[in-house]
Amino acid sequence: MGDAMARSLPAAFRAQVARQGERLAIRFKEYGIWHRVTWREYREEVEKVAAALLAFGLRPQENIAVLAENRPEWLYGHLGIMTAGGVTCGIYPTSAPEQITYLLNHSEARLIFVENEEQLDKVLAIAGETRVERIVVWDAKGLWGFTDERVTFFADFVKQGQAFAEAHPHAVAERCESLEPADTAMIIYTSGTTGPPKGAMLTHGSILWVTEAFLSVNPTRPDDEVVSYLPFAHIYENLISVFGPLRVGYVVNFVESLDTLFQNLREVSPTYFASVPRIWEKLASTVELRMDDSTWLKRRLYRAAVAIGRRYARAKLAGRPIPLGSRLAYRLASWAVLAPLKRRLGFERTRIAVCGAAPASPELFEYYHALGIPLVEGYGQTESTGVISVNRVERPRVGTVGEPIPGIEVALSDDGEILTRGRHVFKGYFKDPELTAQTIDRDGWLHTGDVGAWEDGYLKIMDRKKDIIITAGGKNITPAYIENKLKFSPYIQDAVVIGERRRYLVALILIDEDNVTKFAQDHRIPFTTFQDLTQNPQIVRLIEDEVEKVNKTLSQVEAVKKVALLPRRFYAEEGDVTPTMKVKRRALETRYADVIRDLYEA
Image 1 (tube, helix red, strand yellow):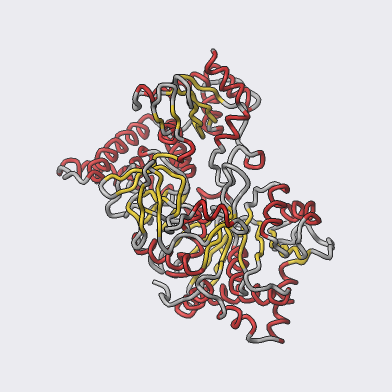
Image 2 (cartoon, rainbow, N blue to C red; image 1 turned 30 degrees about the horizontal axis):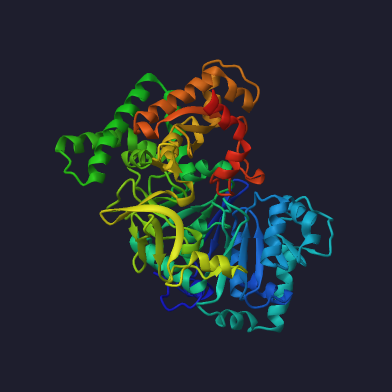
């Protein structure tokens, strides 16, 4: 593990560099070629950024914004900001100019790092409404000859830092050594499903403590490899691709883009892969549909192997003894079908697979365990520095988010809300002491807003407290449970269950465009637009059949009686979903109020 005595993230980073030296730290793909960055080179880049920020005049604990997709420069900037005593404020690259304006003004950032011409255009359009004095651009492509007194290209910015470092050789080290565990390391703006984003302040001390506790549950090694593609503006990716490597020293591989994720997965074959339910669901549905298109023999072999795998996984996950015949059948199925499939997906070497950041259906975990991929579920939120509980790989319990990480307290309030207390609780919301006081009570308990239950010491998440549905008959329904079952269908990307004070439940369905399009092509169903697809009677029938399959696994009061296929995709920029693709339920209920009314009146 990392240096247990480190007082800050930059101190842990420096200690890791001293241990690793010329070993590989980062790998990234550019123009079809994988490039390598050693730990020594990693530190050099970080300290160049730190020196440049000091040359700019960065004050201790001043906020610096970053607007970019995942790439090595994100890490150089992130750690460079903290090394210079500043605070990183990530902005989702999908953010609209109005959202960027809000975050820049709220964070009071005077400097922002942007990735390229596209992001620069957004910032230039609104810079006059903010305090921004300097915009540093990483990728100068398309900006040849461009000049603006506020804009500096990264290469020039770093040169300014080198000149500063030569004149003040100890400045970076002194600023780094002045950091205290209670200092803010980063501000993560929460998704904002119920209003504008809130800036959660995370300290160096809480981050280091949580990382140590989290990694003690499912230990990683210096020779492990992860794939980085989730946004660094979110706590999840920081935990996997920033905090973990600083403590352990494993390798971070950057994908070319989200579009090449599955291809890059096969190339890297990570030993540790953490993702959100949508990616795990998409992988599973892609496999299922490709097998539907394969030969009769391959299709039969796959179905038989998965059925054997599911029976084996159910028994193993339940802790039941597995008969010799079942073990032999599973070995044969694994050798013939499941292991080659796992290799094809890029999980041949995976020892730890985690699903988090949003709820997922138990069927999803059972499927991956059937393939031999040890997928476990974890739970946390930004305000808990990313983690509250996680399943242990050696003893997972499907349908739960595992046991609390060591050293923290978790309790349930009288109404079932999950409360947690310990060193993992965040410092508070930036510039909002009143909301902080509402979120962390006088006894130090963090109120998560999630409703949970205990199952033999394992924590179960029922739903967000504000999302629980009380029907006209007085029944309490947790819509997330039903929605996750619906989303396991390869044809359903998202679902929103409605029924507050109603006689029965209905659902708004967003189809999986790729898979439904393929179904339409295979069945010669004509369409021209996404909306056409959702209005076709055969497609409507397809989705209704998928919903009916789920209804058979639910109680009568939980059954979805009617559905409406939404005529447009979800867009974060238009308020349908958060940047991490969590549905903004209230916004959608308002947008589609007429559709919902028709479902109940028809």
